[in-house]
Amino acid sequence: MSNIQIDAAFDSGNIEVLSLDGASARLAIRADHMSEFKQWFHFRVSGMAGREVELKIDQMNSSAYPAGWPNYNARVSEDREYWGTTETEFDKSEGDGTLTIRYTPASDIAYFAYFAPYSMERHHDLVAEAAACEGVSYERLGETLDGQPVDYLRIGEGDTQVWLTGRQHPGETQAEWWMEGALECLTDPTDTVARMLREKCTFHIVPNCNPDGSHRGHLRTNAVGVNLNREWAEPTAEKSPEVLVIRNKMDETGVHFAMDVHGDEAIPAVFLAGYEGIPGLTDEHYAGFANYQAILERRTPDFQTKLGYPKAAPGKANLSMCTTQVAYRFKCPAMTLEMPYKDNDDAPDSEQNFSPERCKVLGRDCLGALLEFLEA
Figure: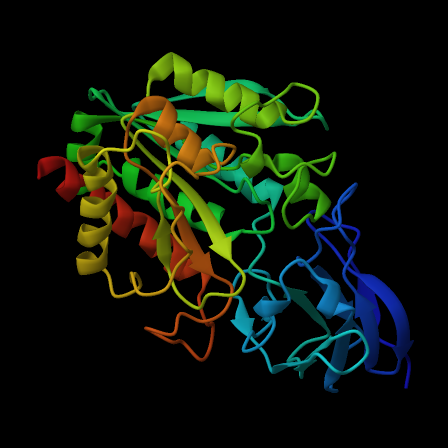
């Protein structure tokens, strides 16, 4: 029989074809441009009808986060709307570490990805639809090195300045699915939680901080291989214009509460990372983070506090990161929300694992927790 065909020359596509043999393929992930980071994949397979395909992605031991592959399941979709999981195995002793994906399609075409993609076209739809809603204003903060706009939305008329940023790391598409859920909530005129939040707060939202990396199919960096979440202390127009224009806007508006939304490769849970190590941290300042975290844990079973990142020692925080820089700069509660690529072990879903739909619901849950936090 003829070989399957594999394509990745599209928005957020990423894969290299090493060899093809009938319904089997040996593949490799292309590293981010001007960077060694590699983990994100997104590609299309055609010519599949009636036969199981076997896709072997090699060189995974040298990926950015090898701990992300054990107990991980690749995402697959035949209609690019519903993303499920398929049989996936990792063998670190095969080749240079091999991820084997097997799938039997119902049709002739299927798309495979590290997590459900969030295309730039969908991003533009999201921004345009939100900007058309009553009470929402749009601003083009600046442009990326590839000439794409940095999109910013402002919602509400309250005194509390709330900043929500997502997808500094473009392969962490969970973040923009979360943003879609949050924006649907905040722009819903029938949602009482949203109405009360709009009265109490002014929301400043950047749904995608890294459009260039998103379009290029990067895991973690922008057009010139820069990790934007290590640029917050001294962003530059030459290397990190995205962070520079966002931080300048923060300085203009002030920040009373901030959440930066991400995805984590290895930890099978939803969790928050805070700002324990920033200089001059007081108990009162840190109580804001601790209180919000406790409220979110009570409100949704998708969130937990047992698993997470190690806490920095006093005075040892990395101030080049968004959460720590914002917490230090504005003396406000700030946090990094992490969602898994793997399943959420506290509430597993065998069909989809952690899914775009759950990211969107979590966006609403985080806003509900914010209202309770502000009222308390």
